[in-house]
Every structure is written in C-alpha cells, then in structure tokens.
Figure 1 (cartoon, rainbow, N blue to C red):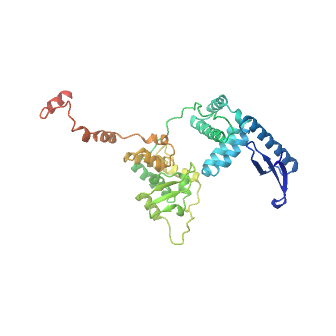
Figure 2 (figure 1 turned 45 degrees about the vertical axis):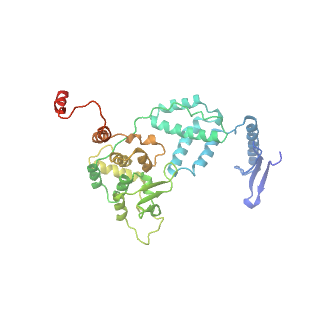
Figure 3 (figure 1 turned 120 degrees about the vertical axis):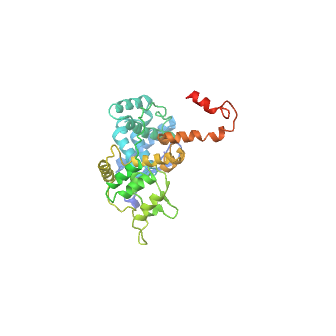
Length: 358
C-alpha cells in the first residue's frame, strides 16, 4: 500500500523507521522499537493488521498491556510523580497480569472476578483504588476509540469503611511539639496550619511562596492540578523563622533538611508516643486542620478548596458539628421565627405553662 514502508535514517543514528496508513487514512510514522530490519518489518506488519482490523470493526485493536503503556505515557504529564508511581505499580503488579489479552475483551464479569479475588487478600480501600485505575484507563480507551464502552463504569465496588478522622486538640498538639526535634517542628506547624500534604511541604521551594500576598502556589499536587494555599499568622511565623536573605535562590528548598518522607513520619510518631498521643499519624495533621476549619464555621466547599479535593464527597467526613455549634445554628433561626404569630405562651403566662411541661 502506498505510504507504507521501512526506512533507515542515517541522520538519526541509522535508526529504522516505519510508515503506514491507519484506519482513518492518515499516514503514520514512528521509530521501530526493535532496531533491525526484521524487527521493523514485523512491527510494520502488526501496524498494518491493526489498521485493517480497525477499518473492519471501528475500534483500534490493542492488548491491555499496550493500552496500559500508552495510558501511563499520558498520565506522566497529568499527575504528580508520586501518583504516577502508584498507578504504574498497580498496573504492573496487578492489572496487567490479570487482564492479559485483548483490551476489548475486558468484561464486567472479568472485572467482578478480579474484585472477588483481590478482596480475599486486601482491604476494600485497596481494591477500590486498583479498580479506580482500571476505570480511568478504560474510560481513556473508550474516548480514543479503542473500546466500545467502559466495562467498569457500573461495576459494584467493595464497600469502603468510614474514612479515618483522628484530630488533635490544641493542648495535645502543643505536647507533641514539645517532644519533636527542632528540625521537624516547622514541618508539623505548616501541616496543621495549612493542610498541606507531607510531600507538598518537603518539596516546597521559595519560588512557590508569596509572603507579600500570604500564600503558597503549588504548581502540581497529587491530582495533577495546581492549588493556592493561603497562610494564616502561624504559618507566616514559620516562614519568618526560616533563613531567608537576598542571596537565597528561588529554587532552593524552603526547609533545607535532607530527610525522607518516611523519616518525617517515623520521628513524628515517636514524638506522639512520648507525648502520650496514641493512634495518630502525620497525615492526621491534615485532618486536624480541616476539622478546626469546620469547627470555626468554614463551609465544606471552602474546606475542599483549601485541601485540594476534586470531589466534595471526600470532604463530607468533616460535615459533623459539635453540640455547641449545633445548638448555636438552631438558635440562629430565632431572628426569623420570632416575629411570626402562632401557638405559644402569652405574656405573663409562660412561666406557668413551662412548669407544667417540665
């Protein structure tokens, strides 16, 4: 077919390139993965077969393994490095071995079998995360004409337990800080006063911090999106305590400590145990920040924005009110209800009726 062929490029290290016409009639070209004539010819034959099958069926033929590779290439520029590693690990260790074969052969029954098998070994939350990656991959494949529908779209997921909500009282936080080494205290204070994640704090550079406008501009967070974090006075105190002068470079790390995330968590939990605070992790400082915001009357949508939640359902765990807040919220209706006429004690007779109700 015209437009198909194999060509060697002396200007590019004598690499082999293949060209073919895809199902839409568009000419495609790429460097062959196997750098030999026989390998390039085999790869060209595969691409021709895919184009022919796509013209016959209307969908791009692809194995699950090939689709996973292309999906990860796309995700690399969309999500944070940690999130990319998480998805790559899930695909490599679990999804690709189980869903070997053609991508279009992935069925609802097969996905249910995967959930059943994994649920015998792992917690529901873990299985939900794995199937979540599968859902995103299949949705991407459907949008790109690789499959007719997302077989995981309406799958019954294992019920996740209630989200962990452990937070500190101010006195507990002070006790923990008293037992923290000096180098970790700024990290803890930033976590509880901004709600930032551990990795976001450790990766913070001076170019991300705008002290004049009292904010931090995170270029890319866990979900791949940027976020603005506003600074309260306690957070400002932390930055004022750090060394910053005219010679400080914009790309220098704010904290200037050479520690791993795991070491931060370990030293923090050690301080918690010394302070008598049990069952508390570093990530729970983020819950503490959100809970204190909620107890201060901040609405859930604003808390979601501060935490960088893309789904408001993730913030629903903070929907609770303390007893005093609930009582105050109900009493606010008095200003609206008081002028209304209706059944109620008349002036001078309320005391007697109230005593009979008690």
